[in-house]
Image (tube, rainbow, N blue to C red):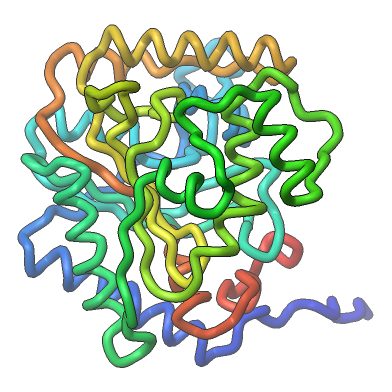
Length: 330
């Protein structure tokens, strides 16, 4: 007789799973009340996100319709197919779905997680920040109400808590400041990669200072624009924001780049950085680029981690406490 597996039970309590269902229902009601269309896009794609910071799971198809094995990627975000829907005239849309990121596992990461992503036509990133606040106010009402809202620029945060200007500092200066001011001396990071060192200072020095409440950070360096437009200035900055709730990174939003040529150049730069870092190459999404060439409406989009939102609403500090079957027991 087979012995029962010791960890067959869910990691999350039934109360946490009921709260998950309640939050999902509230999220859908929020968008229904605003007449925003819920969409459903594939989890599998022939193309992947080129960002070197994101690693995709891969699989293969061997069935009818293909003479040879076809490689597919599990989506790290539904962004690319959702933008194809936007270009096709869908209007403002949202999606709740599972996404997958290889190499991300810990107290605040699970390789498979639930993402809320939405796009608002006619919005810029500042408009969308207001709507993120409205969503969280509605969804958390009576559960874990927002007690404060703060707004910072990326530059203001670095000047306030780290004493450096992130839009003017050099990599070597940043390394010296991390070592002398905060005792942080990592080994193995590329010495000339400014964004790598800025990210380290953000996670180890600045994020612990954000405190309770909802915090918006905007105007990231142009080198961190990803799929966001650039906002003119000296120097230009990315029309991008991140939202933190009680010190936990929760959402990432863009005033979406609509220029197909610029987007192709950014993808190609990502692929070159992957080659330099000896990372696996990925297939660029030509269908997305064709959609951008056809015409993406003026819009802003944001992705929000539902599991992290549930974790904060529940008052726990580990994702496995709010996921029925996390990665190590799936």
